[in-house]
Length: 182
Image 1 (cartoon, rainbow, N blue to C red):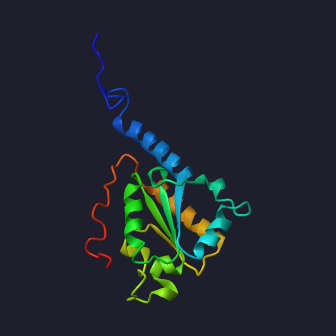
Image 2 (spheres, rainbow, N blue to C red; image 1 turned 180 degrees about the vertical axis):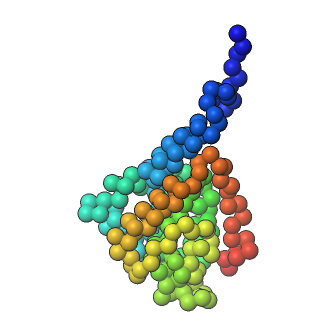
Image 3 (cartoon, helix red, strand yellow; image 1 turned 90 degrees about the vertical axis):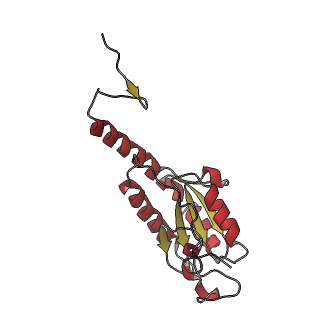
């Protein structure tokens, strides 16, 4: 009687490789899609709308999203408001502390493109969160309505469901080196 070899916890010759990994891939994608822990960066008035989204009327938790205080436990960072040059290194550091896979939702005109406070070259604020960290979903508005934020979350969930979990995601690494903030 021969012993079966084990490779990464799965029997090697029990089933075709694609059958095991396709089911496992769907299971992991389903779990990631339906349990998003988010970290909010309420930097300005969009933070008030974020409170509405997490309140009883709009209830973001019905989509499986729960707030987190630590970036080490968050899958999603919601950037809401004006990003000043003084706040930019902290935002980049918090993004770096998040585990892979990590996602960013930029909420409002200020975090999308600088808004009223920064038209291309401002002395005090960054013209968009995408200049500092990679952004997956942009939610427009000044401030955006809670329904728009929920729509952005659902768009992100579709994006998470379409990714393959078996493929190892690379860390963004030195993101923003070529577009360094002042």
